[in-house]
Length: 260
Ligand code: PGA
Image 1 (cartoon, helix red, strand yellow):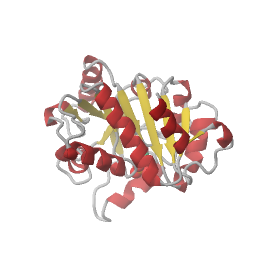
Image 2 (cartoon, rainbow, N blue to C red):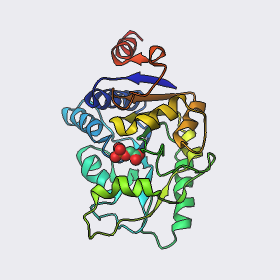
Image 3 (cartoon, protein in one colour):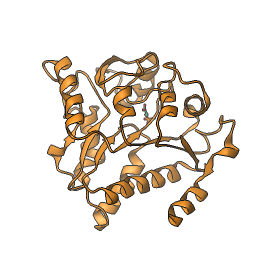
């Protein structure tokens, strides 16, 4: 795991965007694994700017999102399909039929999970996977206690996650307690993984991910076994890390990229 220390959330966003655009330039028909949440929004904005300037095209890309709430229609303002359309897909040149988000409103949810997993495999697997991290160490909606070999399936959200996401729902609005998520094994099969974390609420999860034992108690810790992970954190999210002297500052990492 390569841990990259940034000062500010803005640096996490711009560096994440740089990695994403580099991936797409190197392989224009990349299969992208995408994430929702407040963390990647700024990163998506940088990528959108590049596409609008004509410096980048996603026309040949396909994308698979990590997760979706069960019980929300795709046009519901809190669904992750809606989030992706608003915050990314509608503003870049990816073809909407090449964007996949689990179907949380399918008649047969179990079958739709199997179908989603096989679509990922049929596409050749994820080339570049973007991840956020939950306060409790979840990746996607793989909550603590998730099987480390899991595939796309239904998960019950933890009370921590429901509480963390309550801010997006109005008081009288239905807030789902179930979700479809790709599995931990699905994530681990991605060729490259980039995890972004900002803010002090993530500090304990970041420490457990990078320096803790590998354990289902912190699902993101499995990433220690992956050969190509970049964990990009701002000062607050990285504040509990004990071995900072061994990690790269963003300036060194950027210089290295320019050298090679
Ligand atoms: P956040 O969510 O970016 O909104 O903090 C991350 C996650 O729960 O995976």
